[in-house]
Image (cartoon, rainbow, N blue to C red; front, side, top):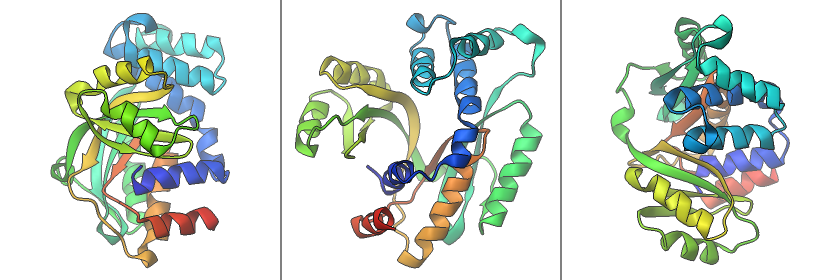
Length: 251
């Protein structure tokens, strides 16, 4: 897996996600709302919604809360509308970041994200300011379930459209061509792998390999973005080497 993805898994194992847990249901509810708005309110007819609901259930979200989120997508409850917004900018040591947010108040979210960028030696930019450094990809996350890297790679590469396999001992990320994400997801499921996420995302064209002294502040910046309750996903061009990842794991 990419350097920051590996750090995210390490952070989960080390229990450093208390702040993120507090906003988890809010994030999951927003994803359900957006997924339901993007297609059918029936999870069996809307794969994005199906994945969002499954993830909510895995995190013990009550069935009534899931139902209300789906109903809210249809306008029930007279609550403010949730919309998707993408932000771009630079963080410490020149790291480029793309942030996908879901908010009912774009002015508040923009102000808070601008503050997070600024506080972490960065600058929130205009649309397109760093987008040219990334390209669209399909991202399928699977549970590794004890498979070796070679075994997982063999299963993944049997599906047409796979570009890369980012192996992790607990979960792995399969990178695909944008148009192939659905087919790869289905092929991996048919091969017996448990799919935990499948969506269109962004990948840096040229990774940034930071100096060791810059790693802590870069990860603090990316963590701060991910922990914001309006932020659904963060993409960056950071790529840590194995030595840096091992150092984090042992810290």
